[in-house]
Length: 347
View 1 (cartoon, rainbow, N blue to C red):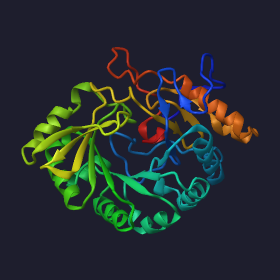
View 2 (cartoon, one colour; view 1 turned 90 degrees about the vertical axis):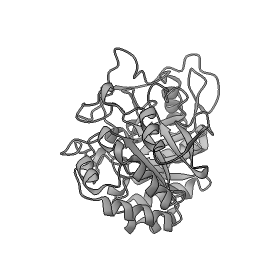
View 3 (cartoon, one colour; view 1 turned 45 degrees about the vertical axis):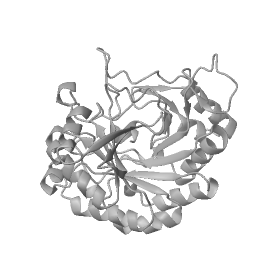
């Protein structure tokens, strides 16, 4: 569980134009880097983690602070990356998170550094992370109903998650964005979650459940569609479609009661959010992934520790992105979910 099916050596660069950027064969350029820094998590969300957690990555296979800083710096300075987001598992499970943030901020001070977190324990570290150079956070929160939260996450930690969100806002990590995975069992509370986010001045985005759960129970028939969500929210709020400010952004937005704070909805299908994707991903054990749903990985950690210079690492990274898939293929009849789950890949 959580082990990738394919690890490759050198990707083909045949036909690739001479450009420093992370271009793929379909004309897309990756400018958003997602860096997973751990497989550990303080929650066990049913759509992400098995109840016992993911298999531990051996300590000597986990990227070090210095290695993460070097790769982030390379991505920004040589490959055209414009934003970096740290993910997990749960990033707060790394005690050296502040050092990672500070090191990256020192090397690329003009690049926005963000983090996706479940918020548990964030109240104790928000100010230190902001001081280290973190710019903003996305907090995963699917419901504000305590019993529902405990059932979905297998942990009774709602109070800590809410305190973390408020602490992030107070520390200046704003705007705080809340990500909610749209589940059948939490649909009835979607309007309550939206109201809470409006009251707390957080930007809410609903995300359709993706086939990346560790228990492999995802089924198309069980998915809540964007249309269903809009119907539920529409019973309490007046929603006005606002489209996408950025064509590569996965979420479509709606204004709420004409207010400036919109709600976003990311649909994996049938809107095919992967088609305009501008992301590149690095796993906690140093594997480079061009697509969330592809098991094709390239071992940057091995190259890094074998003494590869920045030029060699950049060439490997460019080749990986040049061979990126056209889309996620979820709608295809023969779609097979990737071996790694969301918790092992990084959100």
